[in-house]
Image 1 (cartoon, chains in turn purple, cyan):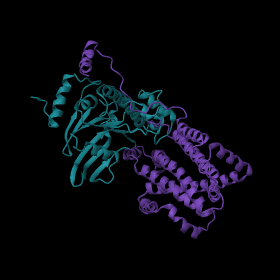
Image 2 (spheres, rainbow over the protein chains, first blue to last red; image 1 turned 30 degrees about the vertical axis):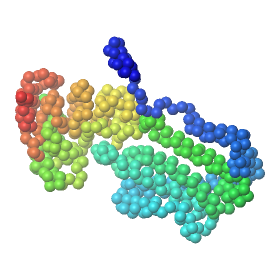
Image 3 (tube, each protein chain N blue to C red; image 1 turned 90 degrees about the horizontal axis):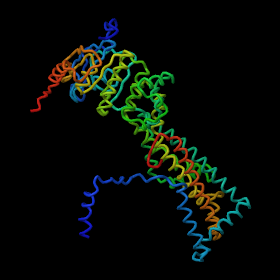
Image 4 (tube, rainbow over the protein chains, first blue to last red; image 1 turned 60 degrees about the horizontal axis):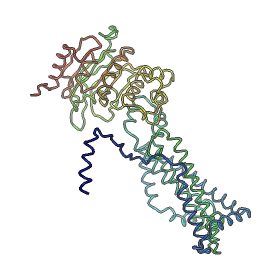
Length: 280
Length: 241
């Protein structure tokens, strides 16, 4: 040990000026292609190996190929496409309403003091109530049909969109407000050219949370009070002990969740191309 | 010195008894000032002397500040800030055209400040000096009668600052706006301006006309005398002993 410690400074002196090693970079480095799929692929591979080796109880966790075969049967029988369409329809309606409501309320609260006084506190109160706890009340009000499901999903979606968009709006640099005054921008131009582009990064955070939220709300709603849809399919399967059908349902939810999240990310990267961050 | 002598009769900016105060503290204490059209004026003062307050009052940016007095300023006023204040989500050309139209005018202004070819760049791709050039282009494209500059070179390195001094002077010569340059840098004021004001405790403490030809050099011994007078007015002695 002692020989190495004394030898090190000697070496530096001998061949100085020493070539300086490049500093270790703190950025995570270049992005690998399709990295997001590596984790899930590994998981499926482990699952398949364990099933093939007979380590898993097929009644509790059927093999991946069993799940795929069941999915094929359900698809050709026509029940799976109908259930998927019903679920997609609910999720999209709820999401669309939640998106519009979240953005409009955030704009109203972010751009006027009156709006802020009326809206912000109310939304914060709404946020404090667990949305799924509203289900019994909404069933009483809207009946047990589609309307209450769409309404609950809309609430689950609008809250994160409102919160993040509103935070981004109120966080717009006051120096830019001053700039807008100097450049003689009208209120409308100010909103369109400074407020909205400045709030977009926050809006996208909310959007991604909202998309995930819409699927989450859907799972719960369709398992509690549904007569159709993916959740209903899974609920029925639970009654008959068909774990493979349950896994098909989960698979479809997962695929849709992943697709919608990737779609939002893609749009985000296009729209916010001016940002250079760690993820680019 | 100013090429449009006939314009000098009509002041671009006129202040009479301008008073501004923040939370009971008087920052501007009854300022009377005329800035002739087309004149290049520098405003010196310690930090906290109220020079930014004066500039913001002339720019009409002092909402909610208590004050009195009469102020006349031209219709078309541009402001250059210490930071370039480019919107990061707009390309350079779109930043220059903020609040106005005419792509050709914007391109011409960018070419004039030496940023030809950078029209499509994002602001975060520019160096500090380039960003400040873009900010100058943005202020020029509106053909201002009055250009207010609040320590526009304060955040730049010394070499870039020298280049920007020459550029600002050139632009002034080409467009002839009245300029009010707020700075804390005595040398910058002497090299650039034809008139230097010193703001002291809310009043104009010294009003000095600098009658030397341009371009000026820091080594000009006559400028040294102006320098002494300005430093004295600022209460600074160069005696480092």
